[in-house]
Length: 271
Image (cartoon, rainbow, N blue to C red; front, side, top):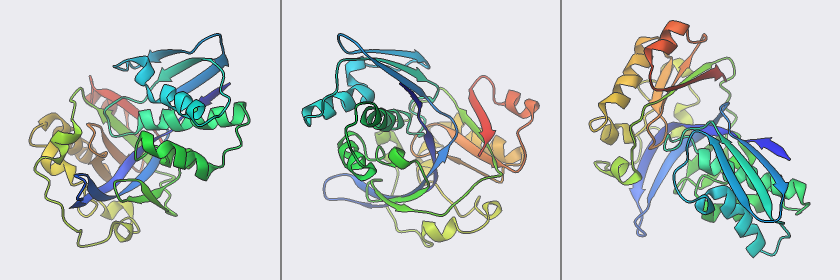
């Protein structure tokens, strides 16, 4: 059986308060984008994961797709030994949710292939311990995310007709680094109200708080955002706390524009 995953960008991100447990509450919008990984499974005599495409660091047994397999077995579901092939097209550490998306896709595929009988809500609950954003990828439709990024409210938001330009440099931004220099605050205007305005009005009012702490330490990321704006982006921003930057355009990016972002990872597609 074979399936594709999805990815997401963050439309705005406000760090609203520090919690007693040391985590932070935030407010952001998860919006699906059309870059995807591919997962393929078949039964085998023992578990085996092969990863192709963009390299993934770490022990394969620690990969989230394997953690889903182990989780379901520990919950008593009959999942046989599997040969798993993962084609990585979503860059890691980019704020796009690639690993979380793979986990959700794996659970959905196992649910279908082995007739586990799980509802979407049940899959979301099972995925929550693996990562705050994992449940989003079960349905992969626009949501307002609050709490630590794990409380979802559906949104009737569509960027159809826009063109996405996504650029990821080699810079790595750790979560700890992203939170340095952040002073939690409540936004003057709720995010749901901001995104209800036309995209053309977003640039100066739809803010990712992490840019304030990340850009001074990573001028390459800041320069990519500015170049996107110079090339006519209706909106450009860093996604989440990762190092990727995305721009929304009214027309497809030209070849000259794409070449201007070399040698970074570049992806473009209609939304």
